[in-house]
Amino acid sequence: MRILIAEDDAALSEALRFTLTQAGYAVDLAANGVAADQALKNDVFGLLILDLGLPKLDGFAVLKQLRKHNATLPVLILSGREQPEDKVTGLDLGADDYLVKPFSLSELQARVRALLRRGAGVAAPTLHYGELTFDTVDRVASVSGQPLPLSMHEAGVLEVLLRRFGRVVSKEQLVEQLYSYDKEVSHNAIEVYIHRVRKKLAGSGVEVRTHYGRGYTVDYVSR
Image 1 (tube, rainbow, N blue to C red):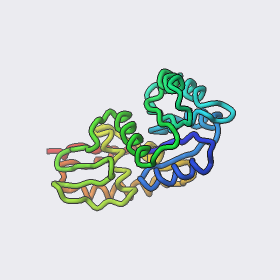
Image 2: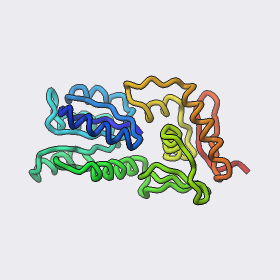
Image 3: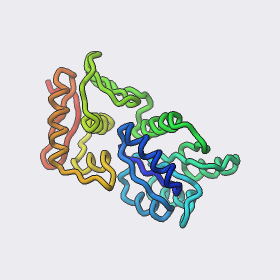
Image 4: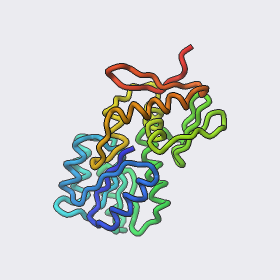
């Protein structure tokens, strides 16, 4: 899952990127509101973490612009502003959550997970299909209660497909969801991860299907 952090404090941005990258997310940074506004026009992100005190274009303005063309992208505001009116303004403009600085990284991660689930239309932290279970908190999978050995990239591919269960996901969408701008990834790499995931799902009751020229789906095994 891909996240944009719009924050002008470089030390905080890097700390957040490190933490979220370690948790398996792809993270891009924007140091000012104009850069954030431009990045958001690509519609490739699953979540925006937004500071209000951005230079060039403040967080409220970024949020207003975003909601003109994207009504559903989850937005988590990070701000040192504790006044109720700032929280009310942010939520009324379309933010989904508001976290006051300073905050614990564990709380941030929990809120990120909750917003990503909500954005995908999934309320529960665990996905169940057939004998397959995928824990979106720890990002681990099991089949019939037995752990499924997945690399970080394999887990990422599986999670994206499971969040769109039964729907076609293209290679381009997988790259956009799993990698930040500074990573160059070939379609061949995606094919390798798909091949590995397909083999590991044997006996789970679900399978990865290839739709040539379109992409991939995870669906129940055909009878």
